[in-house]
Length: 123
Image 1 (cartoon, one colour):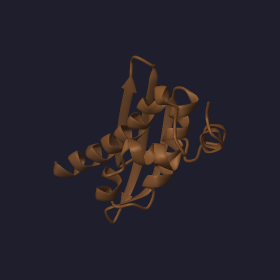
Image 2: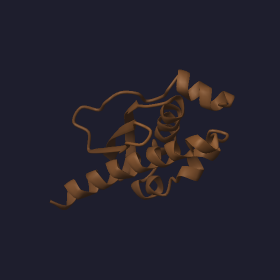
Image 3: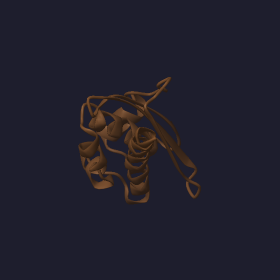
Image 4: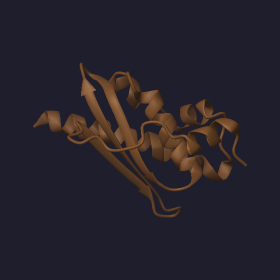
């Protein structure tokens, strides 16, 4: 069902964990499938200096979170906001149709963390 790249990111996820004192935190969930993702970012010079995630969900959800974290690290906030579910699925070499919603959640959680950071800056 899953290709080698998806399985690798599921069994060896990158950037798992929490950043204490994160500059931005984004949490999203899908009550239909039960997946929950939380992304934590550290921002330096308008770039994502560090990113970590915690995901409760299926193998695809964990693989997506891992890939999104790799794609976002080092990018400017604007570049990271342009990461789409299609970009994530493509980088993973594809996902089964019934798991494509997971790629939406990963990008949404990252975007929510960036929006959270930006809101803090407006205060």
